[in-house]
Image 1: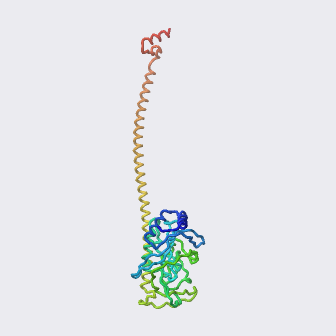
Image 2: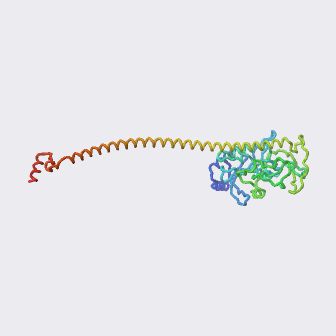
Image 3: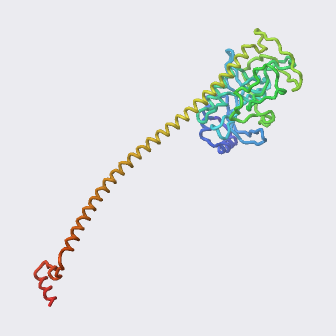
Length: 360
């Protein structure tokens, strides 16, 4: 897989013992590092929001992303839960010192990645290779980082800056008042993601990561933004200009809305399909049980029929025997007393002589 020293290998084996599905996890990691040579596997302590920590596997490195005809190496880190593949991994973008995170509906300001593939993670069906492919396609349309510029920062961000909240609630004072189309979380209202969210404090407990040497990153579509205080009055919305790449046009808003609605419809369709499949499977099981029950009842009915016929036959035999016994009793009652000596008949003359002598 990856060449490691004895200490790292021992640490990896010790960490693997804590996983519920160690073989499946090891197999997925092997497939990933085999296809993406720039990703390395390691184990480190991950600190959760509640302050607890746990040793987890992580895939760290860069993935190739095609953006406007050029290939960029985007640094990412994928943390695998100890319940993998039953729960979705936690994914982050790790910008280097020359890069800045571009906040979008797919990446928050801490670098945490939000994707429908993660939200709709299906155990033993979704895998890490599919996740990375979705990242490559998504980041090809929405780059998560851009190169820093040495220009004076604007007094407010020109791109939407928000953290997608999984509960569907947003504090109006803590987010930029424009544009209005980002008021909802990126994956529909009221449905928390199946993987833990990471706040700024939780991300601060992250282990330090090495920097990556990259082949360049997408240029900045806007200057780095200085965030104003939460209660500062909102500045006027800049005029939309379709020819200026630093502003959000109606086409961007429309594309974002279409993408959000499409994701929500796909989720609803998958949920409806899964529900109907479950109902159909239940009906099939019920049909099979009824068919088996019908066969058992038919066999039992045939067995009872045979037993009834046998009982009727035995009843007739008993009735005949009873009639015969009654006739014999009647004959005996009509006959006079029988001489016992006459009633005894020997089978041989010698025995008869013995009986006669015994009488004398």
